[in-house]
Amino acid sequence: MTDRKTLGLRDTSDTEAPELPKKGRGWKISDKRLDALHDRAREMRRFASPANKALAKKFAEADLGRYTFKRFAVVGSAIVDFNCHNLGMAIMIDEEDQDETLAKRRDKSLESVGIRIMRIKATDILDDMDAVLARITAGMRIRIGDRKDAARAHREANPNQDYSRPDRKDNRAGSDRGHDRDGGDRR
Image 1 (cartoon, rainbow, N blue to C red):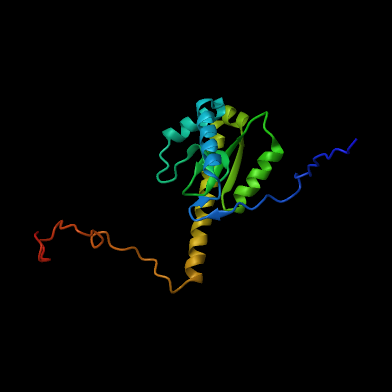
Image 2: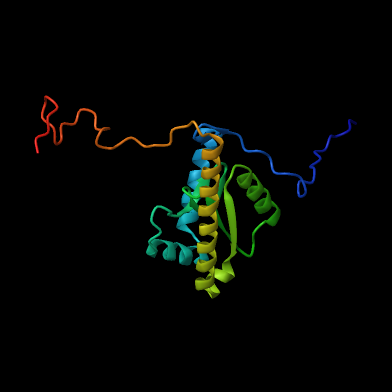
């Protein structure tokens, strides 16, 4: 009789999260895995929890300008409950039956690539929505300040870089709005 080999799993609760490799705008994820993630996110939107639906309704009613939150967004190889791409901020709703070690590992992975995670309990959303919204707003303000500070530090570290934007009027190639063909002004 031969000895059987058994698979030994190591404890990952206290190890650091694996670094998520990024390549250009995308993540190194196979198309098959990415399709599966998007299908799972679609399914999660279809069968969302009451807390998720309540917070989504508040986000839909709010005028957040350019800082909008997308529900059940795929970020890297994770699905977050709400994601604001412009802020690099994600909101995760902690449900009762959630695996904490998996959640902490996912949070570490996302934070290692610059995405700030805010965790909110589902009971807090259902019991006191105003306090939750105040907490989210405070988190957004902190994140906006962090992004401005990082941009300021980058400009100071790179003084020779040109940060000016081209004038939109000069940037209209092939357009003759307001000008005749010989370059004169028609107005």
